[in-house]
Length: 133
Image (cartoon, rainbow, N blue to C red):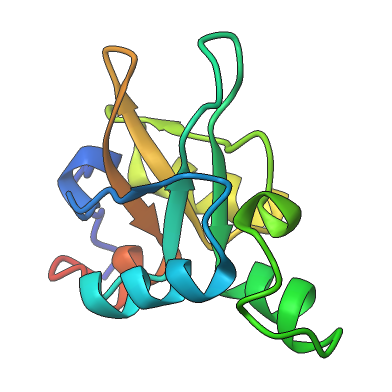
């Protein structure tokens, strides 16, 4: 028997915990915030109005600190962040979110509604934390 999944938008599945950080913060400060807030990524705030948001996540810390044998105190977030951040619309079908994230090779993205970030969505939110899966 082939059942169809119920429609779920990005907003239905997202986690509402968005944490912003300044790009001048050290990797150590960023990881301390991530531990405290129990998140795997942070949105890096714009430096000026015409700038774009960025994202820093576990993968960035591995590549930009751990593997190059630097200490977390000597690396600033702006040196390792991914810019610009790619966001998904709040009303996007969660299946398309999964396809988009997989195609571009990222595990998570901020969810945007009316020009503002309202949450974060990750591949694990779509499967592990999704009670309708």
